[in-house]
Image (cartoon, rainbow, N blue to C red):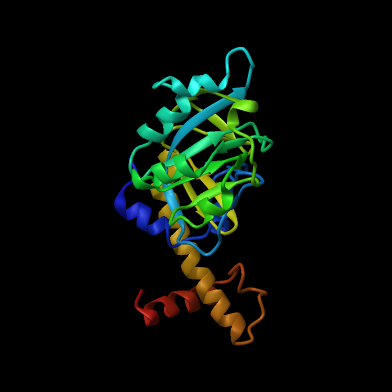
Length: 237
C-alpha cells in the first residue's frame, strides 16, 4: 500500500528524476511510451495501478449489447477502481477506437480515483481535458471501444505503452508523461528522488550564478560535495 508520506514525496519530483533513479537500479523501461496528458500544467499524478485489459474485438462476442451486462469488465473497472488509485488500460497501443469517454471518466473522477492512463485514445477528449482530473492517452479517438477492443480482465498484469504494469505498481505522471515504479521499490525511490531533486536545485542555482558544469554535475570531487552539503545546511531543508 502506498504510504501518504511517499505519495506526498513523489508529488514533488519529476518523471525525469524518477527515470534516472530507476536506471541506477537497473530498470530501463519504466516510461510509458507515446502517452501524454490531455491537459498540461496540472499537479503531479501519483497513485497505485488498477488495471483493465483489452484484447482485439471479435464481432460475434462484442456487439453493443454487451454493455447491458452489469459485469462488463470496462464498467466494473470504473466502479471498482479504489480511491486514490489510477486506472491503467492496456489498449494494445491502438488509438483507432476509444479506450473510454467523458461519462466513464467523470464517474471515475467522482469516485476519487487519482487519474487514468491508456496507451490508446479517449473520445470526448476536450471534455475530459476540462475535468479536474489527470488523464493520459496517445491521441483522441471517436469510435467506441467495441469496434476494436474487447474488455477481458480487470486488475491483472498488463502491458501499457511497452511497459509491464502490475496491480499495485505506483504511477507518477507529469507534463512529460508517466513512469511506473514497482511497489516494492517505491519508498526507496521517493527518498532518493527527493535527494536528487534537491541536488539539481543546487546545481541550477550555481549554473545561474555562472558556474561551469564540469565537476559540478555530476559532483566528482570532495570539494563539490562539501559545497553542496554546506548549501543544504544554510537552506535549512
